[in-house]
Image 1 (cartoon, rainbow, N blue to C red):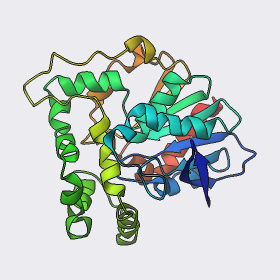
Image 2: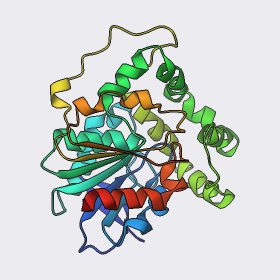
Image 3: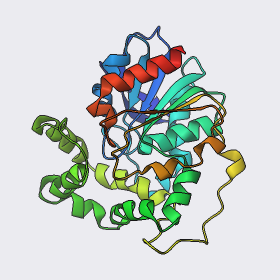
Length: 291
């Protein structure tokens, strides 16, 4: 692994890389509450096929963390990655997990000229996810944690006692045998950087997605520009079916927005599949891209 800082849109971003720069680029976008180093389990298994590029996204790790909720609108987050990708030979492959999937989808939908292949690992397209969260059903119930993360005092709450509550949130309901004490310290180091935790939480606050109360469907949703939210490139969805935060119903109807979609389940995994079974995940990616 190599690390360096790079200026994107006039701001400094921290980027990790694996594999020869002569190989096809694969942009790897992490989610909450991780950072670019979260790909260290998976990237070595892909580095013989791809030049893996894993930035700390805006507000995370050692990258730029501006103040203000509006700085974390999806358009701003996608803009950072457009600046990174435009410096590469395009179109590239993009892999997104969790919140990184939102940015990956944004790249594929709004700059299809830059993205040749889209890979999503336990992440969601905005339309099927909004429909599921608005239904008042199981996904609505599973998404109630979002309200706690959007609270004005969430950073203070989750940082208390050396991030004990954030660690509990991280561990809740998931298979985290991979999360050793040493690795947990690495996460705490990243979370403790000045302003980072509040910046990370601003991703949730800036999102327009509505979370219905269980049993109380929302019908007055803001209109999503469905016609602009198509994924035209080949799309691979990797899924850990034991995920407690993102349920399978959050991807219902995805084929309507991604006509060239391939779904692959990674057995015995949940939301953290890239840590739990990186070899199986890498094999699925390589077989799909070589197919």
